[in-house]
Amino acid sequence: MPTALIIGASRGIGLELVKQYRADGWRVIATARKAEDCTALTALGAEAHKLDVTDVEACAGLGWKLDDEELDVAFLNAGVYGPRHDGFPQQSDFDSVMHTNVLAAMRLLPIIAPMVASKRGKLAVLSSHMGSLSERSNPSGSLYRASKAALNSVLIDTALVHGPQGATCVAFHPGWVRTEMGGAGADISPEESAAGMRHTLATLPASEIAVYRNYDGKPIGW
Ligand SMILES: NC(=O)c1ccc[n+]([C@@H]2O[C@H](COP(=O)([O-])OP(=O)(O)OC[C@H]3O[C@@H](n4cnc5c(N)ncnc54)[C@H](OP(=O)(O)O)[C@@H]3O)[C@@H](O)[C@H]2O)c1
Image: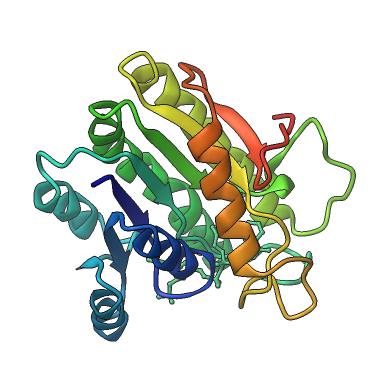
């Protein structure tokens, strides 16, 4: 039975990934930061672990808990948008967005990547098209854009270390998705986004270097 790890699975895209992999008969390990969300994940048949990705000890603790796991697929999904305005940036907003979207990846990806490499599996991060430097035409959401560009950089470095060992590293734009972050007016449902990313991962050839993909598999320029 293949195994998937979903980090940040309480709601939105992460929760939908858990539901779809379980429905396909996969073993699913999932994390959430609230106890009640872990209980709900367990009820879905997942093995749930409590994890706030900004908690350094909890990140290290996840590594101990998952020791010796071999993962076919792992998604680092947890993320925040931050302020919806582009006024003078506040330090607290910067710290919150960068801590959740970037520093957590710098801590968690080195823990998870060897578990993925051991199965020659796929390691995905929920980036965004807003993180693309080469395809950028709109400056709104500057802090979020910077965080996702930095996340892409962390993933590229992860692939340089763990790609040759067998981990195929993928930065995803999940689409503009109807979640709390994406809002009710977004283009696609979490079901479509999760199904697209799962299909893209399942059909993507192994790669030693990181790739950047839309949820439907179309390449995005870094
Ligand atoms: N929706 C879109 O249109 C869109 C577009 C591009 C990229 N993305 C990316 O896709 C990912 C998922 O987005 P979404 O739309 O599903 O967002 P969402 O509905 O706002 O869900 C965000 C998820 O991240 C978790 N999270 C946030 N901070 C966390 C922390 N410190 N520790 C652990 N978990 C944390 C949340 O957990 P809690 O419930 O505990 O808060 C929740 O499970 C994000 O990385 C986002 O940037 C989304």
